[in-house]
Image (cartoon, rainbow, N blue to C red):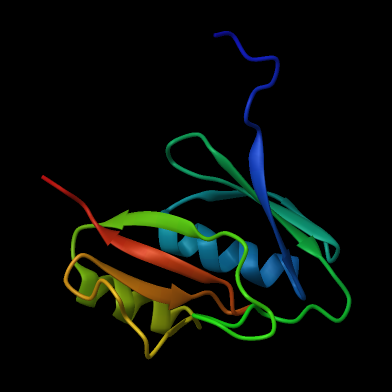
Length: 123
C-alpha cells in the first residue's frame, strides 16, 4: 500500500529549545541546523531530524505514571548502557529510579525531563 505522507521529524515541546538541541546533538553526534530562542533543530547522523519547540510553562511528563504521563518517547541505540547513562548525566540529563528493562535498556531523561530509552544495540 502506498502512503500519502512522508515522515519529516519528531518535535519535542520544551522550555529552552537551544539547550535541548545542544543536549541531543552532543548525545547523538548530530548537528544543530536551526537555533532560536523559540525553536531549534538537530540533524541526526542517520539523516532524521529532531525539532524542539519552546512552550511557555512547559511541565515535564511524569514517568512511569502520574498526572502528566508520557505520550511517546525516543529510543536510542547504544553499545554500553553504563557509559550511556554516565554521558547523559554529564550532559545534564538524568536516570529514573524505575527501570523495567535494566539489562537491555535504561529509561533516562533529557534536561527538560522527557523520558527516553537507551537501548542496548543488538550485534
